[in-house]
Amino acid sequence: MPHNVVLTGRPGIGKTTVCLKVRNVLEEEGYTVGGIYCPEIREGGRRIGFEIVDLTEGDRYLLAREGASGPRVGRYGVFVDNLERAAESIERAVKRTDVVIVDEVGPMELKSNAFVDAVRRAADAHTPAIFVVHERSRHPVVVDLREERPDVVRFRVTLSNRDELSDRILEHVLEWLEER
Image (cartoon, rainbow, N blue to C red; front, top):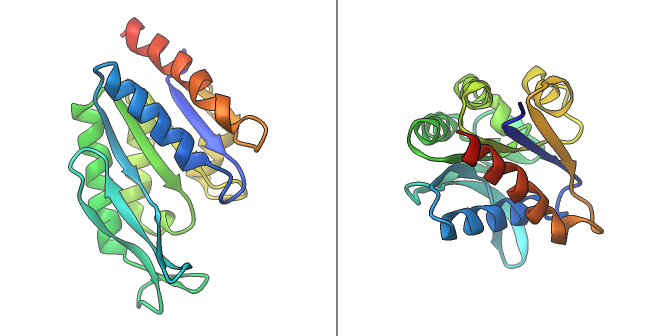
């Protein structure tokens, strides 16, 4: 039976908003939600980087920033050490929370083998998990989640479905939680 949700969609379409709406409702229902999400960092209306937010602890640390050293993705240098911390956040969430969110599994995050391993373990665990994956990545872990795993319910976030999508995801997740 599926116990993972995978969201794809264009950048800026609302994937993170959908995840956070699901998180809020689950927490209102008394469930614990952990994992990470990676919002933009903006200065003067311009995106200059991304940070990692630990949903359980509330800790924030840099994922990538313009001009930073480290592996490059576009104009951003990636802080691989902080991705190791993100991997630990995911692992902790799998063990201690009712639902795991991993937003996003994309080119920056995939620079860390520890992060990739944590994503695989989260997908294999019995804890329901919601993954936001890069739409065009050919990385094996993304292809597995987006196209191949039989234990995944997949949604593509669009302008026309993003407002009701959180309700559809909640139906699946709540059903899985009740069956555990």
